[in-house]
Image (tube, rainbow, N blue to C red; front, side):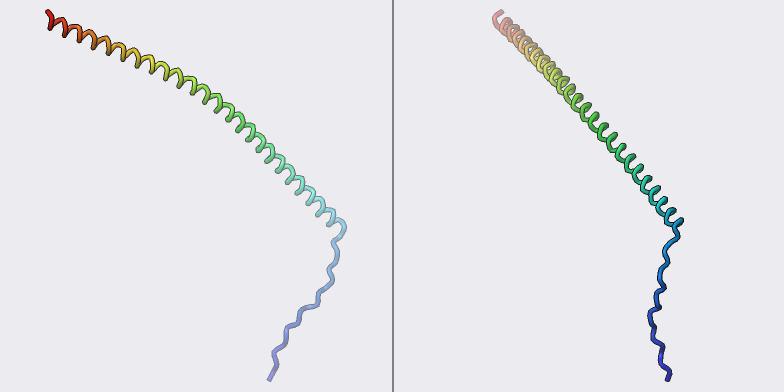
Length: 108
């Protein structure tokens, strides 16, 4: 019987170094990629700063609007209280008039 051949790892051939022009091209490509990454990072940072500034402006605007709303709410509450006092006074006056008319009918 024939024996199955055993697989032996192939002998590695020594790796040749790249020619110098190829190394320069690779370095140039890496430098270009790095510059593009830096530019993209700078653009992202600029967008982040713009977003932060916009958020701060919106926060200031919200604070101003809250203050304005509180002032208007207080005025409205005061007006409601005044209107309620007037209504109660008017109701008391009407009841007093009715009472006077009733007592005038009984006496007269």
